[in-house]
Image 1 (spheres, rainbow, N blue to C red):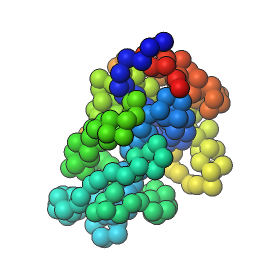
Image 2: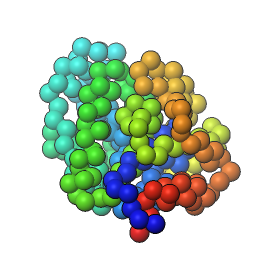
Image 3: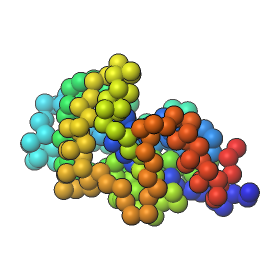
Length: 223
């Protein structure tokens, strides 16, 4: 099947629903730039915590955001956000960040700051000659790229997702993060109209990827 040009794939879903693993595999299969927007929010959360700016200090956060410089570097097929030239470290996955990231992510000024940067990853992908971009997060198909070529929404039973986190050696308040992400006023976690819903509760990663890949190959042939 002939290629039809640059494509954008949006993958949304809650924590441990399979977004990151499936996105990385699709990036490899189709030569796409992989963009994990959750890591962006974690990186900013870690930076604001480092500056001792709590999530209720909206003025302090707005002032801090106005001074930060966001750029991108590649790690293989994945985009990494740099803040003032510094890449994220292991601290973005620690418990302190994990407990607060959904609170910071609910702040409209922070989401607005990242909006243009996230959309700008298309230019990064094209500059590095990728065939497209696969972006994962919680508002990609609904806000960032509502006109993406393909939009998927992954979900799974909260107990199953908690088991997945535990198997990774990480603790995550799955139900609480779902509540915060789904109930925030700005860019809530939703399955947008037209998105393809995939329940990964009883599916293997390979099965989830195969479902998405079968749809994507209608427009872009795998390598």
